[in-house]
Length: 188
Image (cartoon, rainbow, N blue to C red; front, side):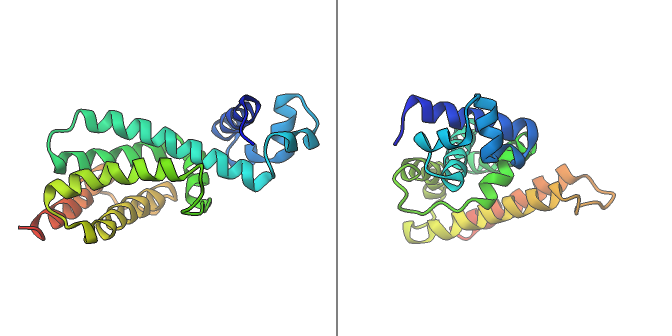
């Protein structure tokens, strides 16, 4: 059920999320922005949940693009891991509403539309972890550790819960170094 009109619906929904927050994903709001009656959207997306899923997939693709740009400047596997973590935080700050959609939308691992994106995202982490020497059987744990730390930090930061009189940027760099150093030293 993918068409250029489906892409247009998703593009409009993404723009609305960027402009208005998650409320921009409302079925009626998207239809109004497209200048159509709400039932017409069913010709292009199955439901509000399907629209949200498609927006989330597109959001992950956007972060992938930014992450790839960030790692092109990084030299060595540790630097690439730092760049991935930093690009995740930057993306979350610059696209707070879209990031909220990504964090609250569960996409099935076997989702045919998401599988290629997920595979590419995992490869972004898998390659530097392999270079560090993390065994293949343990890389999923390392990826989850990095993502959990960064996602949790970003979530706390966005909620204003890192309010002590110390640089949040310095704390983020410290947290990244703990993870990268921990991953590196466990392989020595």
